Image (cartoon, rainbow, N blue to C red; front, side):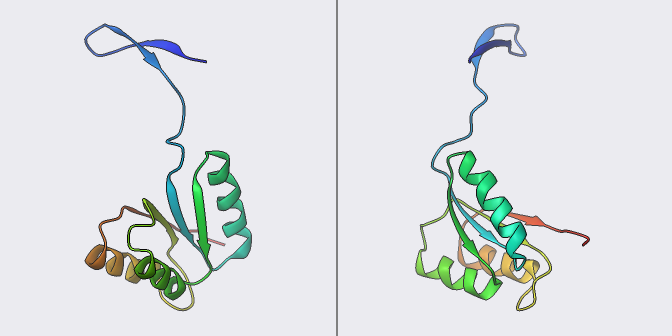
Length: 105
């Protein structure tokens, strides 16, 4: 359902509360439960989701499929490489936004 909302200039404009369908997301997390939860949530938004359980695996996938993703969501604490190191590689080699997640479990 679309509603009208006021812009800062006071004009009405149609408002849609939808996600950009088809966004290609790479999710990286060593916790299989979190990986599955994120995958399900993102697929409900009509995103194309690829999951990796290790940072090195994710880096390999990113290098193999250079233009295959629009965004990366990565855990920070992983056993093979921390999320900040992955972020460093992505920043140096690719032009992709990265969202880092951190849990205190």
